[in-house]
Image 1: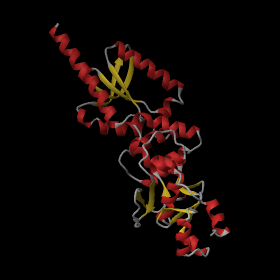
Image 2: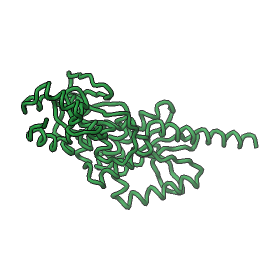
Image 3: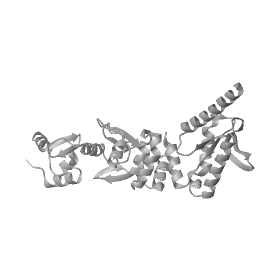
Image 4: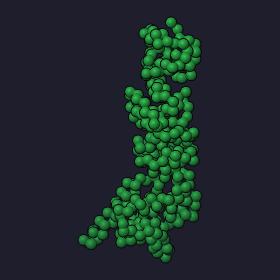
Length: 306
């Protein structure tokens, strides 16, 4: 008993897979299908999805079958899509991950199902015949699983590989909307677009450092005859925090030289200056400032006891 040539042609285009609906359209009845399965000429991979040919499905066929079984509007996503696009990040493999548009909620055994709003053109790509979230959308989806210390490197390596452009990535971030852990990647991308600057970073830093009030903002100090302005300062502790935006400093040699000179003068005057960038998480910002203030307090205590 053979399969119609039409079925073989479809399977060649779909990673060796066909749906039961396609089999029926090609004239394969339920009885015919059962006989083919019994003879090991085809293998049932998922309800409604058949692999043409003997042997178990490959991992890619299993992922493709999950998308086909999920129906219209489904896409391979998250860790599964990251591996498919060869994103330079190691993620655990706990089975296929598939995203569908709301309000659909198909039940698929062994599949980690996600739901989203309507797909936008930049969200999807066709990879080896399987609808998959684009590299940019995939990155946004997996951000919570990426170690914060590796995120900047992942962004840059993906850019070098041509997996995304900064404008496209920013557009996907804006479209997806607020999500936990997304602020950091938004800041990193904005920095690379030259959109973050010192002002945007400073607003975030001031919000993050609220627990460390009272402090002075744009505190001015004269050191060795030169007037300097500190973004955030605790004058009584001789501790300051500087918001180092990449957009300005990377393009202005004058600004770069001024900042290095200011840092040297402040250090000679006994100040501790911590440098904050948009790549730092809120927790990292609070931690580095806390340690600086703690060290300053310990230094004063030691001097008082001497």
